Each structure stands twice: as C-alpha cells, then as structure tokens.
Amino acid sequence: MTLTHRVVFVFIMIMQLSGQDKILDVKHKDIDEQSAIIKSQTYDNVYWLCNDSGDKPFVFPVTELGEMIVPDFMKKRYLGDKIDNYPGIKIKNASLIDWEALAVLKDTLVIADVGNNGNTRRDMGVYIIPEPNPRATYETRPLLWLPVRYEDQSKYPADEWEFDCESIFTFQGKIYFLTKHRADRHIRKPASGTKLYRMDTRFTNKVNVLKLINRKDDLGGWVTDASMAQDESAMVLIAQNPLATIIWYFPKPKRGDDFLAQTPRSYSLVKADQAEGVCFKDPQTIIVTNEQREWFEIPLSAFSK
Image (cartoon, rainbow, N blue to C red; front, side):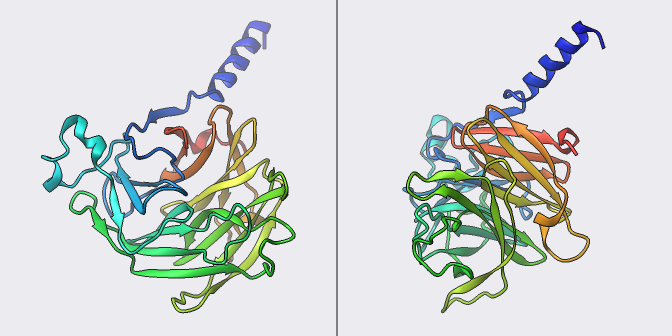
C-alpha cells in the first residue's frame, strides 16, 4: 500500500467514526432527552421513544424519519407547525421517576422505571402496557406494574455502586436487565462493566427479585442501553466513555441465556455525544440515539470481529 493509499484509508476510517453514520435529528420539541428507543413489532414504521427523569409519563411514537405520529382523528388539530404541540401518548395511572429503557414483549410495551443514580431506590419496577396503536389513540394505561430489586443488593445505597440500570431487553418471554456501574460513589465516576439479571416472576403485590446471571467488566464504558433483535438472534448494548460510544453485538447463546459469555463484535461512534438508546431496525441494522436528538444507523457488516 502506497503512502497516498494509507492516507486515504485513514481518512475514510476517521470519517466513518466521526458522525458519518448519522441519519437524522428528531425535531419535536418534547423529545428533548431521548433516553431509550425500541422498534414496534406490532405496528408498521413505528419507533417508541421516551425521556427520562423530570418529565411527564408520555411515550413518543415516531416514524423511521424521526417524525411524530399523530392519530388520524387529531390531525386537523395538529396540522403543520402545530404538530410540535402534540404531547405524545399519555400513560395514565403511571408515574415517571426515572424511565431509562424500553422493550417490546409480543404486543406489549415494557417501560422500565429503573434509573438509580444514587443506588438508593427501593421503588423500581417495570410497566407492562398493551401496545397502543399510535395512529388511532393518544392515551392508554398499564396492564401491570412489576416491582423489582436485585438479589445481591442488601444496602441502600450499596457499598459498590453497581445497581443503576438504563438497559433492558426481552428474550424467550422474559425481561432482562443490564446494570450501569460507578467506580467511585462520591464523585460518581463511570466504571466499565455490567451485570446481567433475569426476571423470573411477575408479582404485582410484592417485589420481584432479579436473578443474577453473569457480569462483564471489559466493555470500555458504562452501559446506557440494550436491545434484542426481532428474531432473537442477538443482543446489542452500548457502552459510553468520554471519547466514544461502543456498540457491542452479542450472538444468541447455543444454550441458555448468558449473552455476556458469548464472544462479541463491536463498533465505535466517536461523536455520538450522550448516547442512551439502541435498537435493531432489522436483523442486519442497528440504530443508536442520543440525548442531543440525533439518530445513527450502523450495518452489522461494519462490526469488527
């Protein structure tokens, strides 16, 4: 390879890792802190977004172009510039303390109120919601509220700050959780690692104890979201550090559900800012979102082995 070819190759690689994967900016004013994203498996061309703490209990249905979906019967009220006034779909009888993750489980939407920055919460859980048709309704209510706790946390806050969570996914009908760690509880310094838990029960009148499956400490950053492929062939998670967002692709285990024990592939986004959402567009394409309203699209062919 000549010097010129080397320069061109390096330039291409730098461009690839410097925002060339960006596909859109979400414009709707209320979607100001994209905390999670998931693609619907029930309705065509629907992605669900949510904000995290400090907002009202709404979820936002958008198209693959990042455009808000408004019910047909309400379109006269929200024509043109007025679409920015449409608040999204209200989850009645729900509260938003720190919504950090979304998943779908067949025809239900799973909203995880599991953000736990101080590792002190004893009121975490997930809402199970019959997935509303965003083109036909503007409000719904939870089917279930499932309280949760980690089987290995006995102090609030814990001695080791490893009980925050911004990542869930579903697999074979169950809900899984991936934790976000801090190396120093006093300055809340990020730690590179996560623990994988499974919810084996669905109690509504007592706490569901999450079963610890495994941990992994060499991810290059703290974990801010995860998602399962529509065909359950793989799980992806994103690990954030001050220099980059690393997307990890874990194939389905041959047996069991220990995704963290599998050999992963990876891809890095250098200028993704505060990336907090990831999902599969299709089995071969990943979408990453950040709190700065941006969406990035990465084909699996770009992941290193």
